[in-house]
Length: 457
Ligand code: UDX
Ligand code: ADP
Image (tube, rainbow, N blue to C red; front, side, top):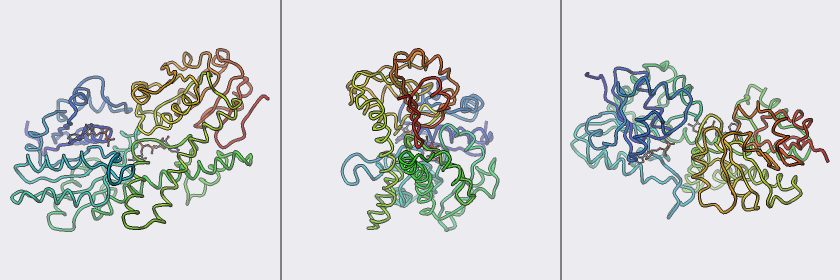
């Protein structure tokens, strides 16, 4: 079958897999190939056991795989055969050398740029989809311009999907952003990308900007979202001192339509692969340009996030008579948020490690993230076990710490749970999702975030 367009996605992770699958699903006349250097990942995408858990994704893969969506490890041939290339490789925080702990590690990205340069035999449009630091597109253009006979047009098209809700985000995006150069070829490339998205996204939501605004907007969007969470989490500390209730405060503040009510849910801290990394990138960029006050301002968002996690541990220790040595604590939830198996930067990792340092015994429970949790805690010193069934997990525990807002945790039979726990039984609700008064009546000592605790002594 002859396809209208041949599209390649390089990198088959949390961004590349779903976003390329969505294009295949919405554009049956295009052939979409997704490649990755990791053969196990590609094998998983070609199996019934997809490498990532994302609600609704299975159905999209089932409808497209083998028809117009193909997963392959043949990166070289795929580069040759496709004229539109989305770059979805990972850009973790650099852990060594200049910018260690702050700047983005661009080795995967640069390798991809060089591979595209080496294997291309015809002109290409290269689209940055992963989040890159500002001016990455420029560096990409510089590398690609080493081939004087082939044209490469570089676009920035950051992905705004949020895990657990990715399918809906991609089907009904608030906006699709395309950063392009205002040159004849830049505009042509932009129009080709617009044509792809226009298969399902209303034209007025497909917006253009210069490439640097596009790259920066992605970092800033995540920084603003994270800032809201740190703002509400910071106020939760004050609520705990003043007997105000953070849920009431968040509701009242959020009812001002200028503020809005989204992203004001108090928590044990934000996690995920993006927020911390993108803010660190922003901070690094500001320091690079000597904007130290601006850098300090955004760094505060990360500091509060760390503080919130430390506070959670202090609250556990204080409540449990300043010692948890030998006590058994169940972590309900390990994923960084509900509806995903992803644990990258999950506050649960820090909480688990700290509890183990205090020589508590921990039982980790999560409906989707146990495999990742095992990898995250591999090699830690201390007693850790893993149980998917929450009723099994809480048996004989002294305390429960709710770390992920999985809907199933709201509806657990807490009478049954209380019966099986060691007394006095404690619940630390790191997401404020439970019915605290009810739990208190059952007999628990309840410690929400940003609200007065409900204790029996
Ligand atoms: C985020 C952005 O939302 C998305 O647009 C971008 O493309 C990638 O980064 P994601 O990391 O998947 O998406 O999840 P998100 O829903 O933003 O949550 C991030 C973290 O913040 C989670 O740990 C979540 O539990 C926490 N959070 C979110 C809160 O603590 N309170 C809130 O009110 C909202
Ligand atoms: P993200 O959340 O940004 O999608 P992931 O780590 O989930 O990040 O996915 C990035 C993917 O990119 C990984 O599967 C990794 O193997 C892949 N990758 C990294 N470098 C290359 C490369 N040069 N060529 C192809 N795939 C790559």
